Image 1 (tube, helix red, strand yellow):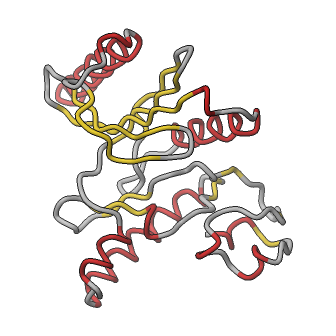
Image 2 (cartoon, rainbow, N blue to C red):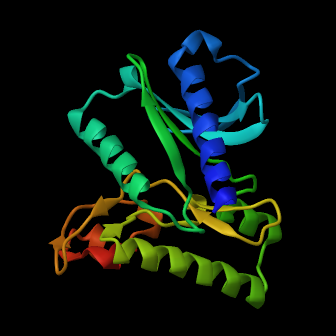
Length: 212
């Protein structure tokens, strides 16, 4: 119990320091933001480093000047609220979110490997045991979010990250995710066209869970 309390205390101190750094934007420099590791519609994902502990995190920095539509703000808010609810070994963890006048920051767990799409392209093919291992982890994550009334709606190799050892996966990018009620059907086109089901392309009403 003492150990758990010490860990919790350490985590609190860690994130208080991160938030202080982010709220004082002049303190964000090359020492705190190591490099860009991703690019999105509304901003970049930076590799962040907490200087006292050298702990690495991913910081998604959304530029408010690029967010023109209220619906986009709604989607961002929904993504944050959903990630706050989720705690699973194979889902990227949101540590905290911070807002300023110009930016919205999502501080998440850093996954230090490539995405599954890049990994498959590099390897050309995966052996059966490796494929089964990834599949079981993906199914575990999907089952967990469904139990919690959440649907991802954009599961694809690019949104599955691998650790450095290429053994464990993390499901990421909940930007199109949503909550759902039992039996609910939708006819909204969402996700990536290359991975969408025929029903989604044809805008047919289908159950939320089929989207995954």
